[in-house]
Image 1 (cartoon, one colour):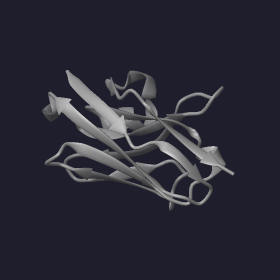
Image 2 (cartoon, one colour):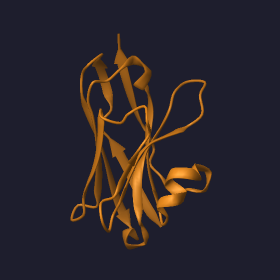
Image 3 (tube, rainbow, N blue to C red):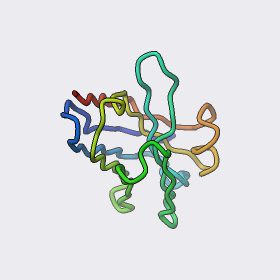
Length: 125
């Protein structure tokens, strides 16, 4: 099993920045990719960004390209999401996720093996 603990959410004004963190523990050797999803009230959970452990390849949702940056610290088994130029539409609960497959992370969210508990991000206008 793998445990994910995500943190770093909060309240920020439009145009501000936040950095989310997700620490993985347990059988982390089984993980190939980690990333972030978000869910706004009344909406489905949506993909935000993903990074692969072996080579650091990344993929982003179009809505966050150029504003969000995902990175990893292999030694700490931690993934970060640096969010800049935040907009009110970025308001959501952000969930860390991990899986054995990069493809699952980007196109089959319902099949993702591990999830964090979520952290609230609120962007005020």
